[in-house]
Amino acid sequence: MNNKPFIIGIAGGSGSGKTFFLNSFLHHFKNDEVTLVSQDDYYFPAGEMTPEENKLYNFDLPSTIDDQQFLFDIRKLINGEVIYKKEYNFNNPLAVTKILEINPAPIIIVEGLFILHFKEIAALLNHRIFVEAEEEVALQRRIRRDGMERGYPEDDVLYKWHNHVVPAYKEFLLPYKGNCDTIVINNNDTPEEIIRITEEISADLKKEYCKKD
Image 1 (cartoon, rainbow, N blue to C red):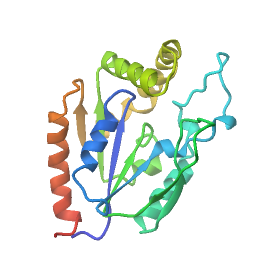
Image 2 (cartoon, rainbow, N blue to C red; image 1 turned 45 degrees about the horizontal axis):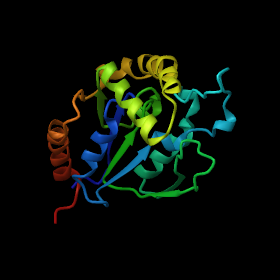
Image 3 (cartoon, rainbow, N blue to C red; image 1 turned 45 degrees about the vertical axis):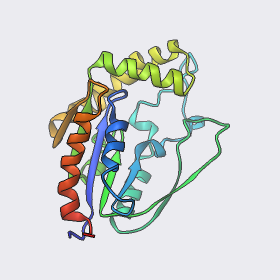
């Protein structure tokens, strides 16, 4: 077994199916074999941002992320230290604050929109996975998610999509696609292909980095 943790970066635009891919990947490991650190938990509070004229905040910019704390915590995990972090609550003032305890593990997954853009974080990644979907497919997924799960008006969802999401994807994520080790095209909402890919990657990692029963 390799004693140095293996760092996997999983990046993908909104609506790409990155969350499903991530959950499928995690399913192949025991709790003490893998740990996850998510970019979403490093947003600066909305109160520190300036809203646009329509009172909507643009969260699709690297400047909205505390990348130095993100980097610091990843390095702590690599060094075998536990980190404690407030869970991101989509800036819901009514949400109860939850403190996450993130433990070190042989495999560390770093996920988020800008992980390839942040150079110091990207340099730590041993394997980079890029999850993508066609723009119209991704948009429909975003509309369903934000409408059903978060109660956002569709007009707001479309405004953010065209003015925030797509420009950010093209500027801060897409240019790094060619640097990735695995590219996953996820245009269908059928899980078989995702499960197959995650099984292949996880099987190799378990042999090299996880304790044998």
